[in-house]
Length: 173
Image (tube, rainbow, N blue to C red; front, side, top):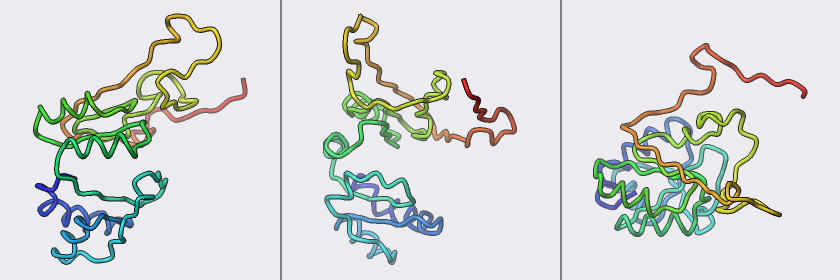
C-alpha cells in the first residue's frame, strides 16, 4: 500500500478485514499507522510473509513510498501468477501493468478473474508461471507466451454457479 493513502485507507480496510476473520500482518510502518488509529491485533510481518501464499484468511501488508518500490516488491516476492493495482491514476496503472512480471496483471478489478475457465479455455487443468514452459521439440506456437491485462472499474467475480446457471460437472473420459 502506498504511504500517501495508508493513513486514510488502511485503518478502515483493516477493520473490515478483521471483522471478516482475516488475520493481518504488517510491516513497522503499517503497524504504526494502525496503532495510531486504534486498530489492534495486527501481527508483525516478517521477511517470510512476503513470499508466503497462505491459502487462508491471512494478509501481509507492506507500506511503500513509491510505485517503483511496490513493483520491485512484487517482482521480488510475488508468485508471478496474478497481481493487481487499485488506482485512479491511469499513468500509474500503465506503469504497473507493463512492469509487473506476472502472467496476469489487473487494474481496478478482482484477481479472481484469473482463471482458465473465465478466459475461455475450458476447465483449468494447471497453472504455469514460467515464461517458456514447453520441453522437447517445440514449434512457433509452443514458443508463444501470454500476459493477460485486465482493466476495470471495481468489478468483482462471483463464485461459479452462484447465478443459478452452469455448475461444474465431472465425468470419466
